[in-house]
Length: 271
Length: 193
Image (spheres, rainbow over the protein chains, first blue to last red):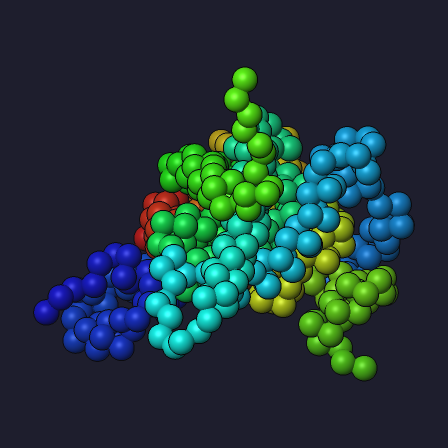
């Protein structure tokens, strides 16, 4: 007979966990454990007996009366502090617009991510068609490499902002980052799915890690609780996420350059 | 008109300020209860309630119906309490019941209803004092997890989401909190009062 641990008794008391029926059966048969549970219940019942100052039915109306005037004088949103003056020229604003464009590009190009090893032609296609297909695939690949490179660069900017921030009461204010992370999550998902379809496991792994971080930033309240904020930064550091992103970005840029059409490549002249 | 929380939230998100007022009226008492447990002080709890709804209003467009509105408010309240306590480390250790009575703190006011049995009143005060003391012993996360589980009946899974913790970490926060609370409550539970 396995006796439940103290922690398992706590779970039983709160009716949590998967082992409730088994624990119930055990407690019915084991007086020692039943005694432990009774002692736990007695302590926690005493905790439950503590009081909180009463607030009557009209309290909600009172709170509403207090805060309503303040709602009309809302402060500028916290994220505006993140943006310096000269909004229209600031690159981060362009970043937001760029992401929208990217999403479209990612959606179109991501659905047709070219295979690393194109399937051999089985039919008697004309050589010109094959060449055109190869050129098209190469073009799509180039567009996608560029889009992925941009996406990784933008993600790196957001994560760098986060990880470089000093301590202090405002360090958990992530409202500035949250402006961008929602779009970044959507774009990231498309790139990750496309990469998965093509077996780009290295890229998929990093995009998965990145997505978890972006989702957490997007869905967390701002300011983020200090412990959660520290833990998030620690995770980014521990995973070497920024480093991996920079490497992948650099690789995507390199591939993009390598597959650039000859006409677009800069002319090399001998002196 | 649909008066459920999701429907009212939806109206508030579309700019209906009165709809937000309905949410404030509906949830203020619950937020106060949690805020009081978190801060241990009535005036601080009032400040947390107010700040919680102000922040909720500012961040309303970020609310998604993946969690309940109440759960989302608790999470904001936790953050507000965290910020307030960091600015005002009011939860100082209380050395004795007498000292606390001299402070005129709120827990007495709740128990000073006329006509109450003096022994019951003393016992109730002692329970409140020990619970406050116990909660002060807990780390912030332990306190939040314990309050939400024990007093508010939230599931461990929901609490984990609220506090940004894995389920196992949430469980361990609650286990540690229960251990500490039991130690503080032990004299009462064994009839040593």
